[in-house]
Picture 1 (cartoon, rainbow, N blue to C red):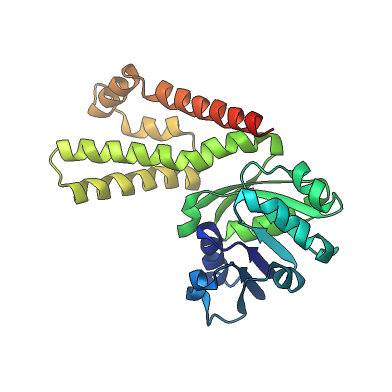
Picture 2 (cartoon, rainbow, N blue to C red):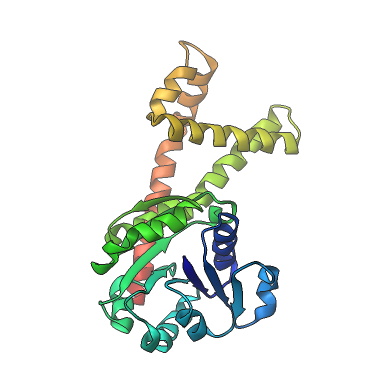
Length: 266
């Protein structure tokens, strides 16, 4: 694949590393106004660094945009004359809708939005994808790219706000749960390093059990809860204190906030 990452900041770097290490590229152009920020990619085979977005567009078929939202509109205007029927535009810019992209470059382009989370840096992102009508013909291309960096799910654009809460903000929610588990482990006698190690790998194991088996969480919970046992005692105490309801209410509050922000932008 001939890929360009337009705006190689933190997210762009993570995507680039994933593409390079999984041999997903024929050529890769990385753009940045200050090339010293991406010198770590100098010397890789078939990887070119440039501050010229138009050069990158001309040399590539798949364009991944990872710029600041305030710069995106002008970049689209600049590259529009150089787009052709082979280009696939993949935007990672939060809140910049497909109709807004189409308004700048035209609906006759393959346009896809991707919403990864910060776990993309370790190849474990949950990335949600949506596209315009024409983009449906190239959605498999985006899936192939981001499946190398974690897992993907294609959804309607109307669900992208909710996906941002569940997946992007969700990283922070899970970090807080792991921190709380770590604090409890310290109180139970482990030192801080051991406590975090126990919390991290236990949460990873729980997720992998569900991913591998496809089971419902309650099915796995049933395997470790015995009558009058310590696990059910702890679970019931947590539920009495509002564990599930607090999580749900927090995510709903986050969703309301992101919708308010969107309305203010409009």
